[in-house]
Length: 176
Image (cartoon, rainbow, N blue to C red; front, side, top):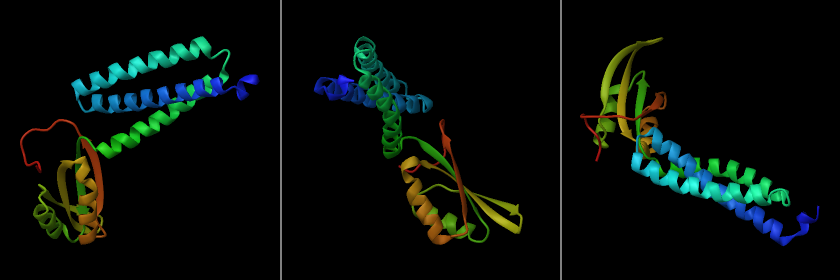
């Protein structure tokens, strides 16, 4: 138990924690770039992620028996790195989203407002539980989703919005 009072043991554990934090953040981003088909970025992230992983795991396997804090740092860095990677990816907001809006009364006004804001909108009439509705479809950059949601709910608080990721696209209108 004397490892708990050793500054070197704590420094080793914090170093492993930092390495795994960085390694897993890069790994999470790499997976998300792979899913979006961004091969060069995924390759670069994978190279650095695996290099850091090798250093971290080698240190834990060679010193972890004498310093159990390294194993705790390894596990905590893994878990925290996943969360940090998701937060970073959310801030980058890379990619595209297909946003669908169902409006029971204000579909035309919503479509006009979205077009005025520079977004391409496809309108499809439909029939819902209580009568006619408008379904609007937009393919937008992920970074634009909060702006679109705000605009929609300002015009029609009763609108129903759902979305899904879009990977491949060709032709059509994309906001520059």
